[in-house]
Image (cartoon, rainbow, N blue to C red):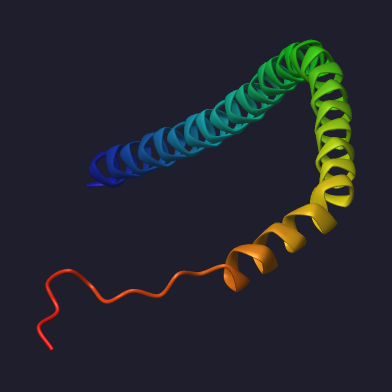
Length: 116
């Protein structure tokens, strides 16, 4: 009977050691997963930063040339507006006088289809 209880004790100790080894293995696994996650996060951040820098560089290159175009278009627009304003000022009186003359010189006639 003593050997049976000794055998049971031996099995319980073996089971306890196995459980401890499993717990340690789980802890190592969790630690490795956390480490892998952290490394992946750092790698993702580095990649994102690299792509963002490339994008900003390309954007500044493209927008730099568009910026010059924008300034040129603004200047052309201002020039055209000034031209239109000067033409308006120049021909305003003549146009108003022409409209007044046309309204004074209307010939009133009955329409040819009017039966009165």
